[in-house]
Image (cartoon, rainbow, N blue to C red; front, side, top):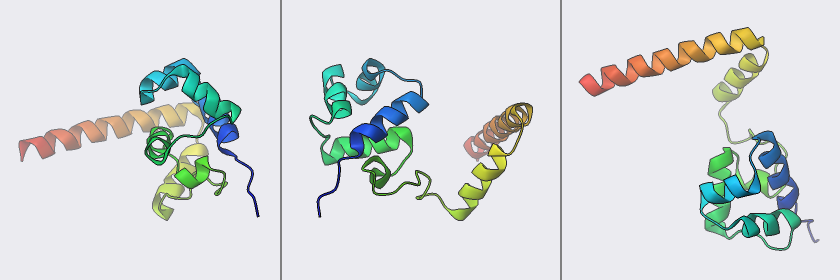
Length: 116
């Protein structure tokens, strides 16, 4: 059974979600803009190493990029999924407050760790 190549569709969607252009993305991952354009059109596909680099950049699984897993959060632990679900339920002000608190906590933790 032949599968439809979902990678172009997934790449377009992720670029749009992250508000990033082909040129910007190409520079970030170290390829030519034409390469990203070719991937988006379905004329070519990235190799294994590049697929992993793309997945890492967008923080999704390679299976998600290939359309094999519709849940881009499938690789997260239950605890991480719960955190995201709770975060998504907050108002914009609540999200901003939580992010400020988290940044402060991370800075404090990294200073304590560096001092040890």
